[in-house]
Image 1: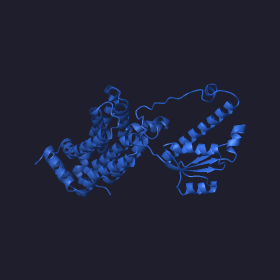
Image 2: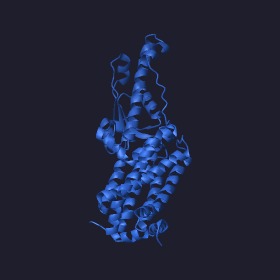
Image 3: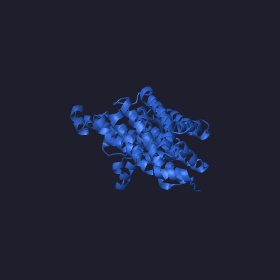
Image 4: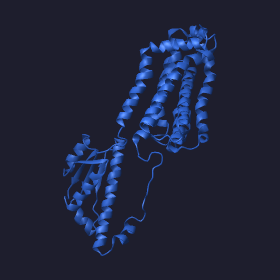
Length: 386
C-alpha cells in the first residue's frame, strides 16, 4: 500500500505499540493536567503562616495582630516570640514572614514619636512572599490611619474632618479578565498549552528522526510515492488528531468544568489550540531541517519548549525585556497563543483583532515547507549522525 492513508495507518500502528509514545502522548499531558489543576485548586494561596514578635503587648498591638490574622491570606501561627526564634523559624521555612512590633509602640504612636513596624518576607517563594508583603503593608497603613484618627479625635476633630486628610484618595479597584485573582486562571491556561507545545516539538522531531536512525527513511518515501508532501502529511496527521483531542480535553476541564473565562466562545479558542499544534509541528520540521542531526534537533526542541515558558510574557512582560529578547519572543509559537488567549478568552475582543497572531502561528507551517527538501534528502540517504 502506498499514499497518505498507508503512511497514516503505519504511524498509528507505531504509536500504539510504542511505550514512549503512549507515555509521552497520553500519560504525560493527563498527569500534567491533574497535578496542575489539583495544586492550584484553591485559586489563591491562603492561610500562609507568619510569626509576630510583639514586644509591646498592649491593647493596640494585640488589636493589630488580630486584624492581620483576619486577612484570608495570612495565618498568624506564632506570637510573642523573640526575634531570634522567629528568624530561625523563617530559616527553617516554618513561616514565610515575620512582623516585629517595637516596645512602647502604642505609647509612642499616641505621643507622635512615629514608631516603626518592621516586617520581613521570604521572597525566595515569590507568590507567598508577595502576598504576605501586600497584607503586611496594608495592615501597617491601617494601623497608621487608626492612630492618626484617634489622635485627631482626642484633639476634638470629627471623623468626617480627619478622613479626607488620612485618605485623600479612595481607590475602587476592579481587576479585568481575572477579577478573582485566581492563579489557576493566570497560570494553567498557558502552562498546559506550553507543555503540549513541548511534547509536539519533541515528538515531531522524533517522528522523522527515528526513521532516519532505524534506516527506514527510504522505505517511508517509497510508501509516499517519493512525495515528501504525502510523507509529511501522512506521518504527522495521527499526531495532529491526538493533540487536538488533548486540546479538547484541556478546554473542557478549564472552561466548562472549572468555568474559567471564555468570553469569545469555543471556536476562536479551539482554533487557537489547532494553530498552536500545527505551528509546533512546523517548528519541529524546521529544526530537523536546520540542524540535520536527529539528536541535536531533539535537544534544541526541548530547549525551545522550556524557554517558551519564560519568554512568552505571561510571567514577565516582554515590554520590560531587552529589545532583542522582546523581538525574539515572536519566534516562539506559545507567544502568539498567549496573546490570542488574552484577547479572546479574557478580554473577549472581536475575532478580527487577533488575525495577526493567528497568521503568525500559521506562518510556522508555511515556513516549514521550505525545509521539506532537506527532510526528503535526510530520509532518502538515511543520514544519521551521532
